[in-house]
Amino acid sequence: MTSNVIVMTTSASVPTGSPDAPTRAGTVTDRLVEANERYAADFTDPGMDARPVLRVAVVACMDARLDLHAALGLQLGDCHTIRNAGGVVTDDVIRSLTISQRKLGTRSIVLIHHTGCGLESLTEDFRTELEQEIGQRPAWAVESFRDVDQDVRQSMQRVRTSPFLLHTDDVRGFVFDVKTGLLREIDAAA
Image (cartoon, rainbow, N blue to C red; front, top):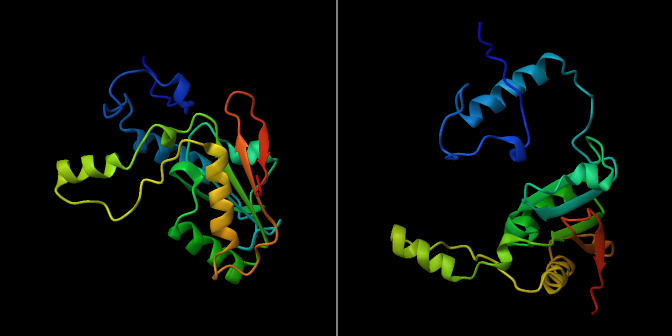
């Protein structure tokens, strides 16, 4: 008799092959939905408010190697987490931070980039490639960079100069080392 037990694993232990190939139990999304059903079976409403307990918003890269809650010692409900490619401060990040501050009470902002970021190897040529392939140029910028420290400084500057944000006195930027797990603070003035 064979078993149909599905085990959720990290990406490091998922069998290799085409990322689009369905797993034995279905697609990756099917696995996630099944995991959610198991989660929901034991779920109890924690009775939390949407306002973060620590009144902090964290902006970070979407890189799958960054487990922000574990790396920062955070619990469910402690912070707002805003993630995108590179962790760069874009207009949409400013939108999220503005809502976070003005409607949900956050006061501090932590910006986290990381070593070995994929945006360090991209250029704005990516937009041209998309335009050639699809026939339409994306309206958004790639926001690639070569110097991660300088990009953190740029992100801090974008936050500090935004007219929409009420609280810009506690904005700090860091680079997360994906090999050691340590944060290195970036001096905004350097």
